[in-house]
Amino acid sequence: MSIINAIILGIIQGLTEFLPVSSSGHLVIAEHLLPGWHQPGIVFEVLLHLATLLAVIIFFRRDLFKLLQSLFCSGPENRRQRRFLAMLILATIPTGIIGLAGKKIFISLFDRLDVVGAMLLITALLLWLAESRDPEHMREQELSPGKAILVGIVQGLAILPGISRSGSTISCAMLAGIEPKTAARFSFILSIPAIAGAALLNLKEIQAIPPSQFSACLCGALAALVTGLLALKLLLMIIEERRLRIFAVYCAVVGAATLVLALV
Image (cartoon, rainbow, N blue to C red; front, side):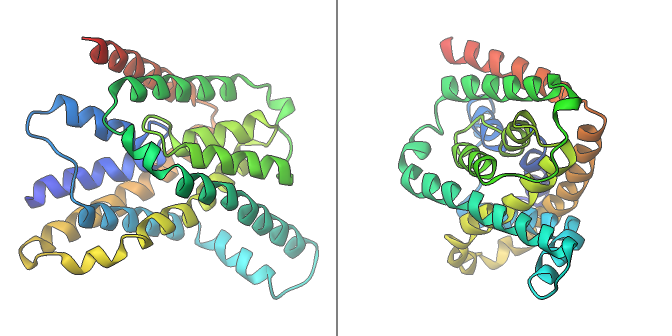
């Protein structure tokens, strides 16, 4: 793998990991459309996931510090932060159960263009519905246990190629009445244990990096880190300006085109 290819893959990973367009879905589509293209090896994939994990930690470093600080301090604000942390833990449980129990099934669908197309259409529908929800009905700044579990279930199902993790979790939280900024914050911080868990399962593979590929892998990871930070900032701006329909239309067009391609 050349350095240029590694950087391109890193940029794609950094953008699609956080923008609501499904990174896994785009990888499956690319595999079918580009001659000779194949998904990067597990070593490079782990490095890219670690880079996007670092992007979330850097971007939400102040929020994470407040969550940790709340464990050792008292007061109303710290109680609110502890409750937020409890909801994160609660949401992580169904994500882990679904991921471990359905891993083989999900993997078997990663070469199905028809599945990718259908799931992209579902992502588009969720984004459109969330954007269409009356802002007056999205005032809650805290998730209830039931809503946290719902978001955790949706995150677990987002392993399906074509379902955007960020798009589906943010949309479901908004549809449940959570105001957009809180929904986005919860979704992205919730991604930390999910991304970390997936990376840790294959962390030992990093030891197998050939010396000749070290530079390329490092460049790809740095590209994913930088573009991941930019994608996080961009998506939060889009959510605040209520323009998720842009991604809804994009996912609908790509999903429909993918279904047509699958039938040809």
